[in-house]
Every structure is written in C-alpha cells, then in structure tokens.
Length: 281
Image (cartoon, rainbow, N blue to C red; front, side):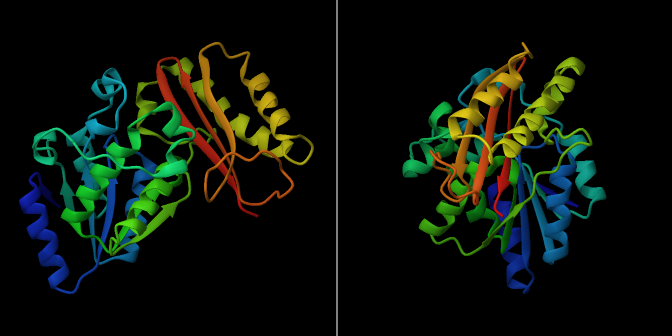
C-alpha cells in the first residue's frame, strides 16, 4: 500500500490511475477504523480497479475544540488494517497540508442544514463540505463511499455533488452494528465499559419508536423515546427526530408510513453519539 501525505502527490497519483483507464473507489474517513469502515472499503474494492482511503481528522467540522482534541488518532494501526484489506493508496495529510490558511468559504444548504445536526452543530456542514470538496478535487474518484450512520451528512454531500457537478457516484452503505446493536463509530473508543453497555439503548429506543409508529402520533412517539431513555442518567438526549428520509425535514403526522427516518443524537457520558433507522418500505 502506498502512503501519501501531500496534496500534490495524491493528485499526481490519482491522475496517473485515471489516465491508465482504471476506476477509483474512494473511502474518506477520520481514522480509528472499525468494521463499518472496512465494509465500505471492501465494497469499493469490489466495484473499482483501485481503492483509495483517506484519514484526516478535519478541524473545521468540529464545534467543540475539546472534542477535536480527544478524537481517536490511530494512524499506524489504521494503516496496517488498510494494507491487510487491499487498500492500494492511503492519503493521510496534516492539517497544514489541507488548509494553508483559515477557511473563509461558507456553504448554505438551506433547510437541509437547519435541522438535527445542523441545528445543534452550527457551521459543522460547512466544514464537512469544504473538506469533502478538497478531497474530491484531489482524489478524483469515480465512486465515493459513505456510511448511513451519518445520514444527514450523506444528504449534504449528495447536494454538494449535484450543485457543484462533481463527476462521481455516491454510494450509501447501511449502518454496521455490533452484535448488541450499537452502531459502529470511532467515538465508541472513548466510552467506558459502563457507558458502552448503556449506549446500546439508543438503538433500542429507535427500534421502540419504529414499533410505535403504527399506534402513536409523532408527539407520542417522541414522548415514548424520552420515557424509555429517562432511567439512564448518563444519557443526555440532544434530539430525537422523525423526519422524511429524503429531505430530512421533520414530519408532523404519520399518515404516510413510508420514507421515514428516525434520527437520534445523545451524549453518553461525555461522548456524543448519533444513530438512525430508515423505514423506506
């Protein structure tokens, strides 16, 4: 596996790959890799000639400086895992390589970024859009792979690709879960053993909400989720939203039981986790 750390070098490498007629599958990550990332990687490897993975903890998408500081950084171990899973190229730049000066650009995704993550993490999606745009320009992939756990992020990137005419295909991969249901996340590294056990109740709350949709109103389902989580003192619910799975705008009635996204964000101790359940049928 080739490890590249500069923008000039990754751009040269991927241009050579494309000029040879080979397709590039791209998996952008912030590292601390888990099975969810590896499933993205395996899918990219099956569907493309060359797989490129990036590891970059992007400072512009963090609202909390302490969260950025504590985000797991395991580059050496991650590189070994990627090499063992048929990744041909790893792009692992430093912050100064990606941002030669402070980010001055701002994106506006309209109502898509005013709800859920956008509401509670103002400026977050400008940071996401900026770094993803940079990575797409440098890697020039034919396909780029993202996990469904970051459902709103995927919708933002899809809008970005459409509005800026990036010549690539986005692929959304289903959430990969631990045997007990916890959505795999790099942030899980920060959970204590006790927090890790309690964190499983976020997915259980989503499952309960899905079961309640047929009998309860939106307000009643939200109350059911809050009541279910209330006994767990280390869980601080930030939001639970019932939204349209395409627009991610809140639903106020459940007359149409299709295209529903159940989305949740909560702190378990000091660690913020997100999860979702999409009901398209």
